[in-house]
Amino acid sequence: SFWQKFIKKKMYINVQYFCIVGADDTPIFESEFGNSANINDKYWKQCVIHSSLDSVEQLQWKSQSFYLGKSIDEIDNFLVSGYVTSGHTKFLLLYRVDNSKKLDSKKIDDALRSFFNEVHKLYVKVLMNPFYEPNSLIENTFFEERLNLIVKNSKIN
Amino acid sequence: MSQLSSTQVSEHSFYLLHESIIDSYSKEFENYKKADLPKSEIKRLRKELFGKIKKIGKRIGTKLAENLLKENTKRIKDREEMFKFLAKTVWRALYSRSANFLEKNDHSTKFFLHDHVFTPYRGLSASNSTDTQNIAHFYTIFTCGVIEGYLMTQSVTAIVHAEISEFPKTKFVCSIDNSRSMDREAMEN
Image (cartoon, rainbow over all chains, first blue to last red; front, side, top):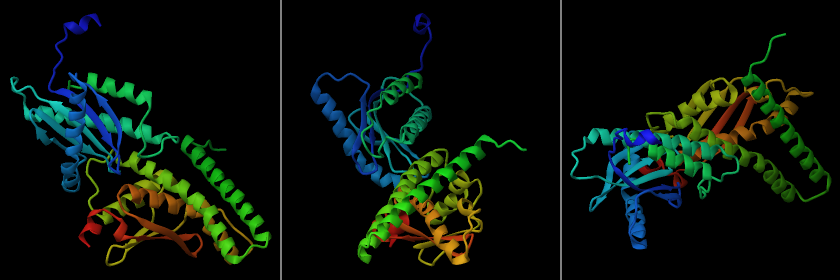
């Protein structure tokens, strides 16, 4: 809207790519938020996310809560953050932190935690749909729209 | 005349639906019995028909588990906690009461869930006590499926069946298969 230009939005991190991996380790949803210069960039992002699944496997049994940490894997300047639901569905977020801005690490943690909580609630809604087969592709437009809203409204991005 | 609350209405509607499903499957099974088939065939058909009810229960169990567990801040760490959650929260969501008693064997491979008044067949009665027990057995299949589904979301593969020693007291026997489970206790053995 007109006033949004004047409202200073707190941008903590730069979200690049979000992926949901089912309990049997097959991706069931993916969405790209940042800009990629060419097609190889996109493949590289997917590659980073899939390579972080190893650390997710180890951390999910040790962790006390669903949220696994703001940096379970790091390559170049890109960090991967993860979240595992009780049914072992994994949410993975690839993001970039601006090194120039000095960001409080606790604030990043809180922002990511609230983001993942919102996405979890949305995911449970998709699960409740009797026509949705668990661990199958999520092709729900409602889900996509809501996810974009969450990313926009939350403190990340 | 007291007015029923909305949860009571949905509960009763579910019990009626459950009853009519079992009724229609039992009638189908009776038809097969009349059509002189060999005993092994009848056994297979029985398993198939009532396995359908269990499948429904399993699906519902997984979804119910995810829905109820999303609000938990603490993760469920071991099998005892899993079953405590089952006996309290899941039972409350299904039957508005908690299960009465929970037992387990030494190796944590068998868990017994006791329910003194199992609600779905609280009002069931047939001509004699053995008949009642036989018919009541069908009403437990759905719940066994729900328990199996719930355990599946915790990466525990189990086979659940119910024993009715004294109607309406029910004992749900959950035999966990360690070779097919991936939770912490299975990994340690």
